[in-house]
Length: 482
Image (cartoon, rainbow, N blue to C red; front, side):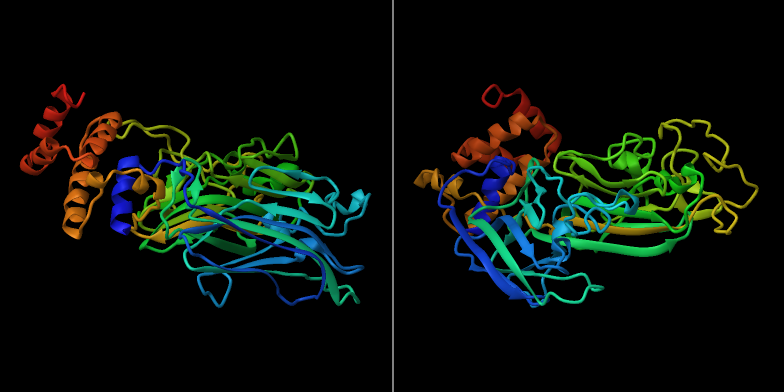
């Protein structure tokens, strides 16, 4: 059956629309239970009968514990396919893409503005996540797939500096669908896709040192879902521009084991779809948001969602940034003082020509200093910085092409169905042959359909002609296939 689904996926090109067939909804709610702090309250324990199964909504209306309870510190745990440790372990603030700076959980109606505490009573939300109530109101529509079983729990926490509050009142709503694969933007993910969370936290990152947004080992394919970053300079300068120097960093992407970075932003705030050190202040959109911002101290929390900006890989990947940046030259030119790293390009150089490149130089936007680039002297204008990063992504074993296509199987007539393993192997080879041809995608779709409908002439053509150029010419010129 799996091999048949693989063939159907080739035909449909893994279209993101999932046909409605025999899917089933599962759900569970908890209404106002009193539960001890720091102890897991199980919300759902479900066995998948029509794989793949997917958790589609997690909503925590309230986690109330006076006076010490903090809704933002409460945790959501998801144990996938028999895990003993939850692979998804996030706070409610993190689930809403709000970091420790964006939510203090105090629920004060009018927080003291001198403390720079965010206003928890300002509701907001988008299709993927949101925060809509004082004591929680956190929802997430991030798809959590599983093949065998899922167990979820919530854990109430309290302010560790506060004495009192040994229990909390908790409400929860959780729901999912059996027979539903994950669709990320325009891509349907394989049945074996698994949601992962990557964390990076480091204090006092020296100027020009690198930080890791995510790191996936070789042997795993995947796709990026979203990134949240909290940034604080380790020391505050009276010059605002110096506090924001860490934002000059360009994001580097290393897919599929390459040592050569692909630059995916011209600055950190550029990656988060803003500019000039977030000059217009806080904002929240479906794609990006600045959920905390202190302009005087260069302190911020920001997120980016990759549904409409896909980043995927096939054999591991790494995504890094750095504190501050070195600028000059073309894409992937080495840093002359650190040959193992590259500088952020300030020009486009056609790789087919011998374009004259700019002389190497250190770009310092607000201060000119006579020091070697890359040093971290206390007198340097660039500050060390504190980073906390949370990255959500999906991974699956490399080359796993098993996809769900229930309705496509059901819609085939008896003569169209592939009945044995030898047919499966033969047709898989023919589909791969079409996939490898340098022809228009529209023609490929037409050929897939003809192959599925048992076009004997097309099968013979694909099996007898080994010359790809000849095959491409015959298929594009023959009126039967135009």
